[in-house]
Length: 163
Image 1 (cartoon, rainbow, N blue to C red):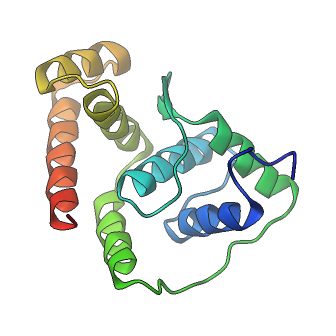
Image 2 (cartoon, rainbow, N blue to C red; image 1 turned 45 degrees about the horizontal axis):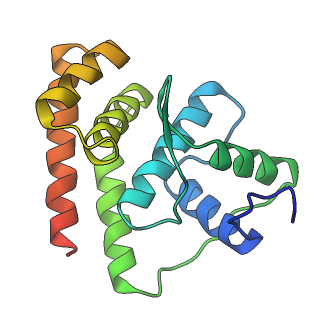
Image 3 (cartoon, one colour; image 1 turned 135 degrees about the vertical axis):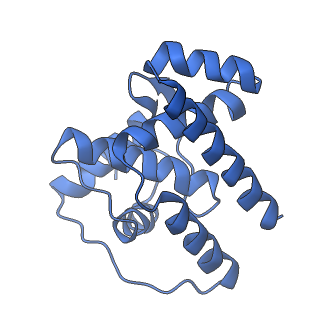
């Protein structure tokens, strides 16, 4: 087990990977796949659906070295995801909400939205400062800033509905 992140057991990895696969990500063969996997996990954990990884703000938005390590471990060890049904109705509802939230989101949009969320919730910046930082960090145009803001508000509504 020493090659798996210290905080995760293989059962935990299987759960995380299975959630990612169910959401259409979890692969690491290309940059786009790795980006999508990182952002999908980020959203899965803020929706309260998956285990938590620590994220830092990096070049392409929130990034977890531990998740990257775990996904490469999964690939190298040929671990397969499993089909499962959520035993808890609330988790099934969160999965459905997350799936809808991510539907049709491009890699760039995932990057922009997750960065905006990270700036607001982790860095603790207000809306205006987060928009300014998004423009500077990601070279986001006004359309992308509006999109990130709208998705952030949507996330807040969804989160509130589960409280």
